[in-house]
Length: 169
Image (cartoon, rainbow, N blue to C red; front, top):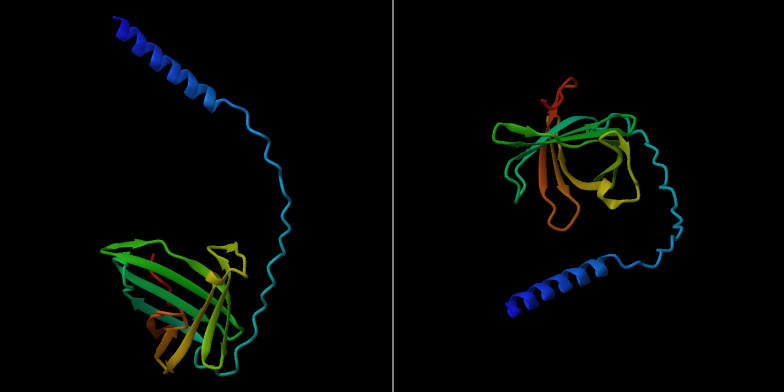
């Protein structure tokens, strides 16, 4: 009987200590003002007249580590703007993807896509995740071959699509 009371007292005092430890007052956290510089504005430059890259390009890839087919539709406009829509198809299901908009340019054989809006929201243009670069390997009237400019970058083959084409819903 004494052991039971001793055990109950031990449990009650432990619970009380735990509650007291949780209810201690903490020193107020000092708020520090952080100055942020606004991202630099991005302005699109028109593409050279007659650029073979202008158009709608659809790629279907199966990236390593991804259980499905990755579709990307890149639309490069003559005025230097671009849209980039993606989908992931797993079996018969199509998962929602990204819808990005921004600018593109071709300098020394490197295609740069700079996102300005992602899914309709303005983004931080200084974040490198929104700047993608591809070495243009080959441009034909119906086919485009690119290679990502980064370590372990993948090769992408895209085909030209009609002006009315868009990814299925």
